[in-house]
Image 1: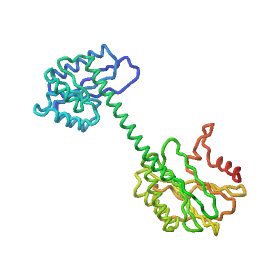
Image 2: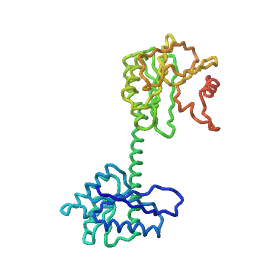
Image 3: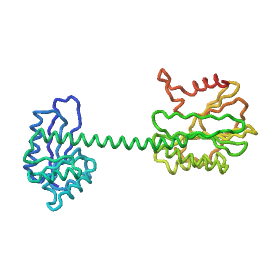
Image 4: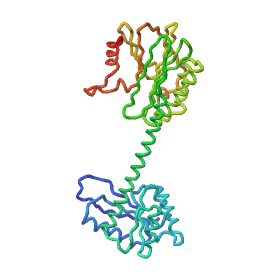
Length: 364
């Protein structure tokens, strides 16, 4: 493959270092390539702007090879490299290969209509070769690149907005209010996403007339992916509770789901309990999820977790911890967004400060 490059610094007066524009120039005529180079050089003496690195290839086939291997900020193509019988088809193929990279067409004076058609088909601009001069050429390149970046940014923002709306819809479904009326306990829940949509959810599910299950899950990350994993875990947990599955097997099923479906470095902290209002016995399993026992006598206990978060390592089996609950005792299930929140001094609240507050206000 025959190719060469030329570099001209169009930003000598700028104290900030910025990467140069990389231009792929599809040009079989060396004198035309040299003329474009000369325009860049002359513009250096007149204007400021981003530096330009220009790479020459002589055919569309060579251009496709370069586009598969390297990245460019813009493409200049001489329409003479296109098939005379179907120049628009050649340009459309180039646009497809270029993806979001702007394409600028060089056309002769008698090819002006082809240049106009090319713009209608999606190229950024066209320049008449006989009228090329430094200011117009470099200005056209800069405008094309900046316009392309602006369009790409707008598309990315729109995609992020759509994803955020979908994630918020998932979270609203997960956190939909239900009438929790369980024997022997008062239950309440609060979830306030901090700027981002998160993969957190908390739920309470009736097993029978005397037992109910509570669970809090915090999936790593934010946005649609974390929300989708949380939704799948929610469906799994609700289904297994309806089948009166023991929380040991339920936790194992959730762990198997995370191990087999989550991507690398994705995990979920998990706390689940089952309460029997007749025996006042509470059984719980904590997998990387801290919770608090606030006793009626003012003592409290931090539950740090006997098992790693779901999805970190494979666990063969889970064993629940059992304890007795007295009238006035309180179980508080928290995600890390609560105890890692900052106070006015920019310090994490921490579990101890939250425990002290809850002890002081337990009977209010």
